[in-house]
Length: 118
Image (cartoon, rainbow, N blue to C red; front, side, top):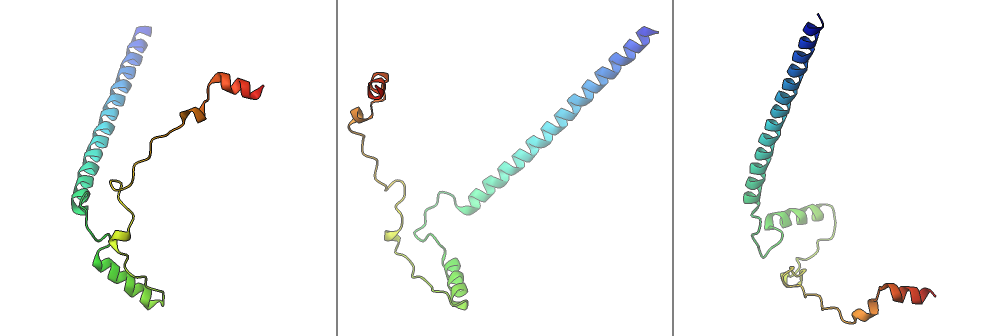
């Protein structure tokens, strides 16, 4: 009789393992499908948003007009449109950092620290 119990326990263990593998494969397949769907949606959104396209006007005219109407209706001041030349420069226009000079000012060597504390 013990051999029948062992065989039934072994088959139950094998069946549990197979069920776990099947479940893991299903979950993995669903996750990959969801990831592909999100990726394609992101690609489509990037295409529609015109990522990388540079326009001279950072705010479209329709949005600017709606903002002005909103402010005027509530009695708020309407600031003038800033000149694009006065806007923040892009990264390509920003000046590069000057190379550091005087590295001897920042000497963190062991000997200097020990002498300073003495």
